[in-house]
Length: 197
Length: 197
DNA sequence: AGGCTCATGTAACCGGTTACATGATTAT
DNA sequence: ATAATCATGTAACCGGTTACATGAGCCT
Image (cartoon, rainbow over all chains, first blue to last red; front, top):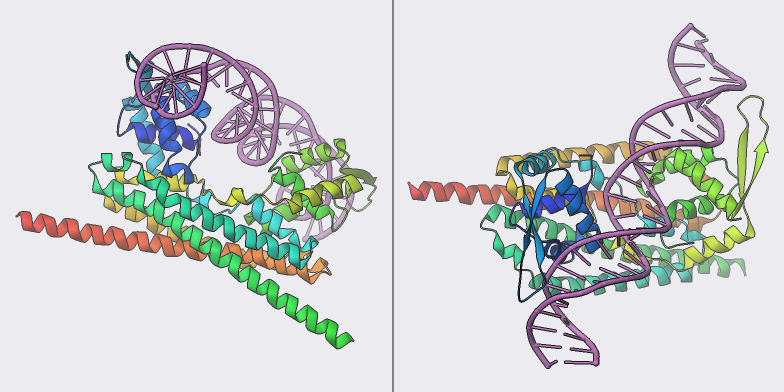
């Protein structure tokens, strides 16, 4: 398997804990870990077929009477091997780049005027704050995180949450500093105008 | 044009300053702004054809005698309109997610032992520090940044650099805190072992 | 002759997104 | 009835990456 096929490795990772259906996995990928890796259900179902074709998972149809039937997927030994290989040779480079269309947008925002730029950063701050309010609520309804007996798991999940929180804080700090610099710039411009008169 | 086609908008953005060849653009996208948006030359050439087809740029072949000939691209009015539209309706959501295969890898690292996890974070810190040493050197040889007369441009380019620096600092802080927590965890485990004896 | 910079592409692939489609079962 | 939850997909598309290919002109 290639470098960064992270959805498939994510699926394998979750199947390490439990047999799951595509629907179960979709719920997980759209719960609190969606900050790390969001996935469309369509993509998950495709990837499950893909993993099955590769022999990394097996599926079993479960007949249900209170709900529609479902396919339970189970990770195979080959799948576990693949997962551990991915887990051990961590690719750090993915975090080096900040490849980001918003930053590209900011890069060119000198084309607009100061007022427009300030408005952007104000809007950004509002958005980030709103998202950071929503997040803890979303985190409550995940019983998955309590399902593991291994305290080392919980620690690493916390590391991911820590990253998210730090990232939020950092972005707010950054935007506020940008605003300050814009205001300083504005002041200098104004005083220049005055001295020209 | 759709939501986040950022390479094409980046190209339009740079063409706002100057006529450029694909080769020129490739140099820029692989200079200091590669932290924001890296691009393969193959992709740039494709995108230029694409933009031309859409009427956002025009090309002119320049016959050169000391070097191979080249195609100079110039942004059209229609291209400028498209660029400003993109510039004004900024999409903030792209920065909300930390969609990141490394973080996904950390998420599952509870499957390994403490030593392996600590090694990961040590390696991560080393990598980030190495990259942050390389970066300022790379930034020196960009005369593009001096080409603009507009001080508001320079300010926004600084904002992007600021983001990169803050992000680097944040990641280092995060990794160090993770290491600390891992060491604390290790101590607790050891003391448990002792009390069991 | 060999390596560097300058210069431009093609083709195959890939992981992911968007939009759309279907249908069972339960609760109101 | 109808909305909500459970459950599984298909098809088209898209932006981007990887690998490969070519060749002019300069410097040593």
